[in-house]
Length: 585
Image (cartoon, rainbow, N blue to C red):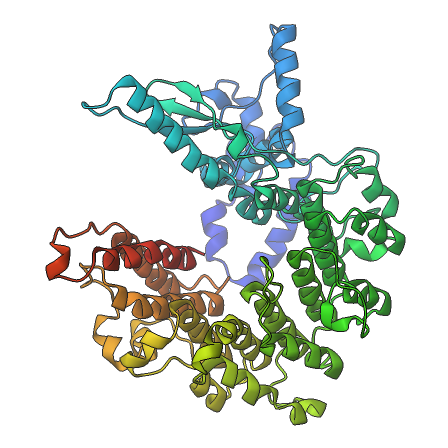
């Protein structure tokens, strides 16, 4: 082919019938091309890598896009070796074994560093690099205080990193069964430029007990790195990695991650009782949710008994009160929904419905049936009847739809509004899951936000957001990536402002508008998740920019007694970042 003048460009122009036998011939030569072949012939068979051996002047470190490759330094002393070992021990899987991965990344992406940047941003074992320039009026003590404030804010953000890292490294690891599985911690120190000093946080404010959820998610991120196809994740291996006598939050999150990947199915049931006996709240949460996720939709009788002892309504009449935290009981409610997912189980549906609409006032300092508990009951009821809105079978006499719509949208008695408002979010999510993708216009219209602006004074903004998402989950096929769809989905008084570009002054009366708009963005993101739709991306970026701009609008100077109260703008400003995070997500 080469002697006939056929090269790569010529091959691209040939029809498939002629190209196929030529490709077969090329494939037969790719494995061991003769060393006497020229550079052009090697290129023809896609073996340009061999030409590097013939041109020793082309060294990798001379190329401008080279990522500094790890090299062997023979001059290392014992201090450097010990320091490197300490860093490896404190690092997680993503950092401690990065050398081999970097070689693969260089081969795949060459000069493209976006994956390296993502790894650096999602690393939790390295100190963060921040910049704080001193202003002319600051004294040295003021500058040091500003440094501590900045480092504390950065440390708070570092605790949120595990959620992103779990997605980046999901399912990549096949652990050695004879080696302990290491779960890294957090490095909350910062290198402050331009002084280049390392500033640490107040350790008393960031102990594992005070920021328990951060360490819990660190364990979840580490566990999700284990592939669902990994073998040998059984009782002995989990107990081998159990942290001694004192349970911790990282291991609790690790148990949840194992359950999400289905590995807790192979665990002996007595292990669950061993973990639950100390009544460590975070471990109970991780284990119960993990077991429910591993046995998703199976209605396993033993797991049902294990979860039922954590749910007040499922205890026999006259049983003693549960001496466990409300968070653990909330987990039990959620676990029942996962275990009976899609089953349309009548008894479980009755229990969840009774928990949502329970009107008895709890006078304890930590009321059990808080909004969190009722929201979990709503999710659980939705999972049990997931997507079955048009075919509720033996549940018609329970009048689930009418009751849930009444709790979510109907007018309430003044003396009961505080109790029933706790149930509104749970009722909305139950309806969203039960009628998901059903295209039921009647239910969607009833759960949708009202058209009258006056009614917004009686509905919390976050409930408006949930009702917007619920309506679009029901009318799934009608979501479109266009500004026209956004405008048509808004109440009529807000449609002319649908692009947000004209918002220059913050008012609390805009909170319903902002919440509905954030709900529409979230619905759009759910509908086109993973599709790579450029239209959806452009719309979401537009609203992301607008919410960021709104969050930075400065307060207007005015005399309070002649204008609306000062807190009016502050109320809107405090809610704008929350809605911004919804659009981010």
